[in-house]
Image 1 (cartoon, rainbow, N blue to C red):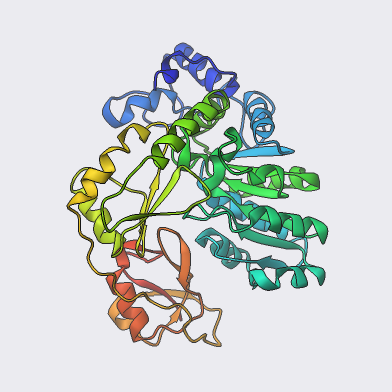
Image 2 (cartoon, rainbow, N blue to C red):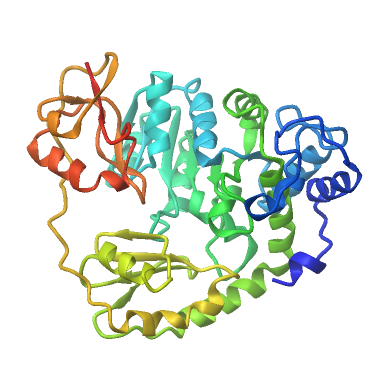
Length: 423
């Protein structure tokens, strides 16, 4: 994209990193690569630390503070906090805050980071089905966590859920990791960052941001305390490369977002798939979901042999994230799928194992084939999408063990192929 070479955005942190890089000749500071190298380390010269003029993420007062004010303005929220260790750390900061408010509720599918945060903090959360949500909120609660959009680009009534929370005085926490780009185009759904009390977004998923680049957006009276929790859960060695890319991407998308998503919408809507494949309706024009009529994982692997890499395969659904960078290749997809016949989809593993009375204990690792009858020690997720299929405290039966063995490469967390169990 030519903009990367010519655009001079209002991106104070990005510009400070560029400026200091011109001045910084001899580096006796971390990172240990010293800013030198080619190949993988071509960007090393921009990978800096808390030097004069670069501010401090955990106590911002200069260019980082300015960059975060611009983020908050772009996302139309009260405060926006950068993270370089992903939306997982954002979720843990949100949970740390929510634990002081009262009962924690959740509805719909949640990412593994929600459940891992509960485990690490010794918290419990109550699941509430969507159809009974308003009645439960009427009884009072501290917070409600929900996901919108989900991995398949569906909003799942996120705005309505946030409105219900506001009506009943319950803190709304939206995992909107896959909706970071929503704020930058009228073609896209409204961003929850201006509606929910707390919204988690992963800019690196859909924008020009390096891996781990996420933002925690806050409204109302929770902003100052969330800044404190950011300092507690975040690494003290944040990636300046990632932070500078967050700052740059925000400025670039503010300038080009409408143009980007008009092109994406036009090309996505004009796409004609070969026989046997059909588009699945989504709420996000840049999230393409294709019903393969068979095992999408088989299709994904066959496309990879042709040099086309997709985001995910979930059952019969093949998931593609379309961005300003790859939209020009979208026309290749129909012909690439023309001679790809998916294998039949195997019977899916059905969650809902028997729960053990044992919920606490030391963690141990067992070989998969030795796990029948053991009590699972963590929430095991099929990734993507990262939602639990086997819950902490469930007793592993033979079907579960076969499932873990067959899908070990896509399950987490496992310990070097072993299963984490409760002793």
